[in-house]
Length: 628
Image (cartoon, rainbow, N blue to C red; front, top):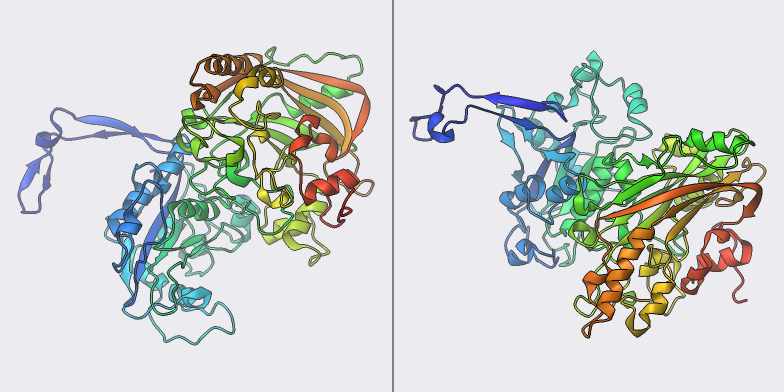
């Protein structure tokens, strides 16, 4: 069947099915008077085969705690932490806080994981493979088990054995899934391979006669993602052993996931983010962390729990196509027309609405131009705006507890509007991204190198990058963690929620507009600093009614004896706004530091901030003075 397609099923009332005892049961007796029905397939899928790989000394320690799911701790002392029934529910069921439910819910029903069919045509959701020998772990052991291949020259010489790849070949016909096509007969590569689907399909001649028949070890299963669930154990396995890693759809890679049978379910989703969609880790690996991190706002970062994908990953996963507030070309034309002093929306409509995941089918991401290349007049960067709600998976995002203290739900997440900046300039790539990925080890690093290497050359950054949304930039801050509630609109200037007795002063300080500068930048050989440029326009989004409703709710709550309740501070599932564009006849140069709102500098700290204060930019290379 094809994705995003409606099918009609008709039943012959004389038909029957053979029961286990050999008798024939008439279908009319099972489905009453129903003779036909329709169903619509999800737009996207990944065929998936989870394999529970068990050993003679496997043991479940049950130390990992999965919120809302006690399966693993309850099986402590047994051989395996999960049964095939458990795995089927996790990957193909509809139970909340499982990978299956999570991906279907945040995609608005666009995505599902699909089981494979075995060589006899039966649906196979998961398989248990007993290796009948002691567990051999580590990268060396797992690589040998999967494909009888030495991961490194120094790996142990293990005894020959049937590989897991061979075991899977016995279960299903991989060529059935390697050779998928669209309705028009063109080749269908499910995952968004980097550098691009088209380039990878061309490089490996996908869909050709030889590709469909030759027993190539490149992209061995291709459109099927194996999930290896290792039932760890034995003398070399710690009680706290965890395995969470994945190969992304990149170049010649075969996407796959490796997990311990002990692993938390949010790690399942994180690793599937890599294997299904090619997402990048955005958690802190070194300090200062730099701007390209997403903190606790994204399951691919430092979130502990099932925080939804942030706007950037919603785009990478193909769950969302950002909505343009207006076309890039319309802004370029407006700036070029000296006679047009006032912006006029081409569609005659300057209204918009942000929708949160609380109504996932309406969720949206708004895109606004941010950077224009001076000489080419190309838009080389955008702002992405999204609304976070306070229920469902949005409630599993978090901010540091010392910025929340609700009387009824002390550290619950109230939501707000997040702004991200997607900078695709040569300055960003060469001065920031290459440095983050490789330091000084790859002096020839460039956009072409990153694409050829399969790296994502355009990681997202929070806007502005200070106050930071990740603790890796605030290591000197002894007052706050990261992110604080003050990173989200309209709480930018709020040290803590709820407001308390001085609520009127706090309400008076609450912003109603989001101002987004549009910068014109020089070529890289003139200016190497990313994040700076001449401000040639400002896009202003006004959320007057949205903020007014929040103020009314807070004021009403604050006037009651039992005030400071969580629900008074939740913004709801939608935020309406109007917008305007102002052209600046005399451009003003902005540094990277100039993007930081002055009202938020009270929350700024850390090495990254010190360097921005000292030099106006962040370069990864110039340490700021020890004190000023």
